[in-house]
Length: 425
Image 1 (cartoon, rainbow, N blue to C red):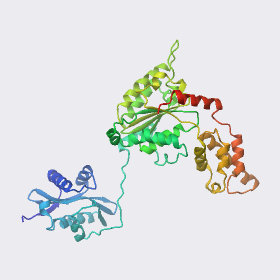
Image 2 (cartoon, rainbow, N blue to C red):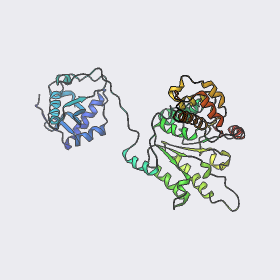
Image 3 (cartoon, helix red, strand yellow):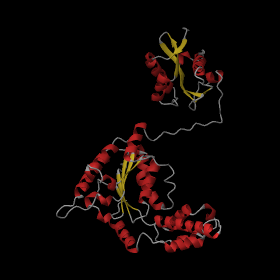
Image 4 (spheres, rainbow, N blue to C red):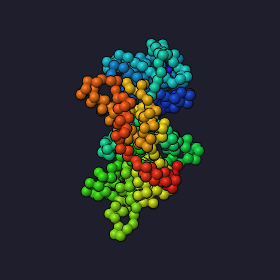
């Protein structure tokens, strides 16, 4: 057998390294780290090669982190195994890492990896009680500055689960939006085109903004809220600033873009002389088709007054769905109350009474009543020295009685009519 030697991996060894990489994969094992990650480590971290003449027959690449290092790729060519090359590569990598102050070396291997004997012979212990977990960061580094400029952010993953009740609405949004957007390949298999734009409509305080944020959280896409009132203050004018904002959003890989109270910039056109806002409506109508051309985006517009929108704004081709978000039913009210009631009070409280007393309340109304009851209990404890476990049922019922509901019976009736004539699910 021709003699081999160990040396540092050199830039000229790239072709040989890639041959080893492909041979490793063709053997049925998928490397734990991506090719781009490993190549980056060959350039800036620790990488050693076993060579015969100028031919690379083995390689070990390691990345240091504090006092520990990880072997990110390790392979020996098929014709050169079981003659000590693997152990020699690991030993050479270990010597170089020790000079950097590294005290521990670890390696992750895929399930079914057959060539692990050299690892045990080299002194690596098989930690059988360990499991490997991985998570991809959902946003690129260069997107972070752009998000800050746009006032956007990546929301916590628990927002969707934290939406109390409203199961019917959540189910519709989960099936119509999240399912095809989160798995576009599966959607394509069934001939489903993932949605690009939707409208949420309903009375004030019913949770349209909460649902928009929940969708972004569920998808793990950046959330960018566009505020028409802020854009109007720009020297470029509302239409110009709106156009520039959407041009910047183009540079994001994924985004949920939210426009609340969209009726401010999508009003019905007509009249003489034309309203100054008609130019803004025209601009928005041009922006939406361009926005729809790129995947990985979702535009959510919300309105309390869907009848005020220009008819061309809602037509097929611009918005995939027009979804009503109404007042919570009894089950939803119970779930919302359970989310707001302090934990010390929760077990002893008559939730049935709270649910009955808040028929016709919006989620915002329930939140207000809950906070009012807690405030009353706090003030009583301080001023009268009466310490209880928290607000009582009487506190809640009194707060409910004093809460002015957001949605009148007339508005609720009009909303039901809009569902029949405008909603598109």
